[in-house]
Image (tube, rainbow, N blue to C red; front, side):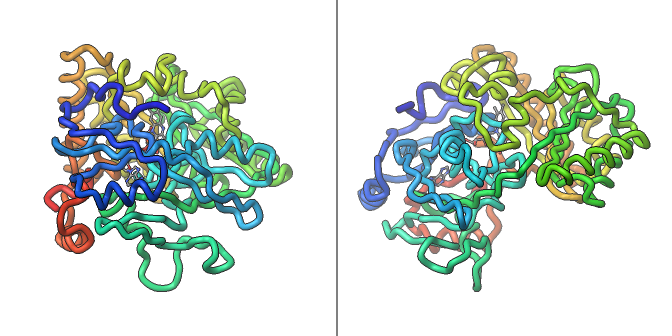
Length: 428
Ligand SMILES: Cc1cc2nc3c(=O)[nH]c(=O)nc-3n(C[C@H](O)[C@H](O)[C@H](O)COP(=O)(O)OP(=O)(O)OC[C@H]3O[C@@H](n4cnc5c(N)ncnc54)[C@H](O)[C@@H]3O)c2cc1C
């Protein structure tokens, strides 16, 4: 079992942590919550790289490392759901589904990251936002009561994200109102064919290329899952876009021809097939690569277990309108704010919105480089906020403020501060 804190991530102010607790079951979590220890900061696998990994926002918290709760409690291929505990990694769940009629919506992070931590963080999978995978949660509240919210096996026959009545599931995502000890996540049908089409374009064509991708998305030539990599992220001279088509073979074939014709009328150029290899395709197809190759390519070979000790990383994740003009503006802002060109991935969220993943990497043991990255990040936050392009995920050194109503709900659920304030509830 990997302890959450072998080393604190270099990108952030070091935290004083009173202890690291490692329960092995939901019952042990209840005992800890009732034991009077506080404040508790729960993490699943603590690999929230670039945003603080397993660190709490404030000093003096006890970290509740839930990675030993690693059971897949239920798997229903017919109805398309899995009940997972916090220590279940996306690689482990996908491995269980290999060769079945279902797949799980993987992210492009390490296969050793958790399903639950990423869902609670409202991360982004290659097929849809992880929040859309979530249908139910088992939570341990501050008073030690264990409750189910949302859909849970044994209730209605069909797992749906929104049941009748006020929704409670997302009270506990990007939240610090409870410890989550299990989640019900939906599984996608395994597509007959998965084809990832690579396109390139020059920096000068960024605005026109983004507008073309938007119109393809609006008109449903492509699903809202395209990823655009800037030249640093693509490790190439120009931009690279990955468009994923999946479904029946005839549909994929027909859409591929339509797209190639549409590309001819845009700045997007079909890239050589080697721009998408089996490792990338397998992620979209839900088949995990046990060697974690795609992750290792983007971390200069640093494996998940050594990431916090060896790599410095700060991430900035603003949501931006899906338009050529806005994305060209963000490219300019990034260039003006960053001391050295960062890797940027633009993820299409729907036909109106994209998010940006700006990764400011540096050697973990270089304090000057760390300071420079922090300054660049502060400038990015300021410059993007001036245009209303706000981050949808926050880091431990720059938490977001709770609204008055969120704070009231937080105090009602946890009046005695059993749980440490999170990155989305500053001032609670
Ligand atoms: C190269 C690279 C690629 C990446 N690609 C992606 C990507 O494609 N998509 C993406 O979304 N992210 C990506 N990431 C970011 C990150 O690695 C993932 O988001 C990762 O899944 C988060 O770590 P985790 O699963 O260990 O969650 P954790 O760190 O365990 O949890 C995240 C947060 O959720 C809360 N939390 C976790 N578990 C519990 C619980 N049981 N109860 C209550 N609260 C809890 C805590 O606030 C915690 O800080 C990438 C990172 C890198 C370096």
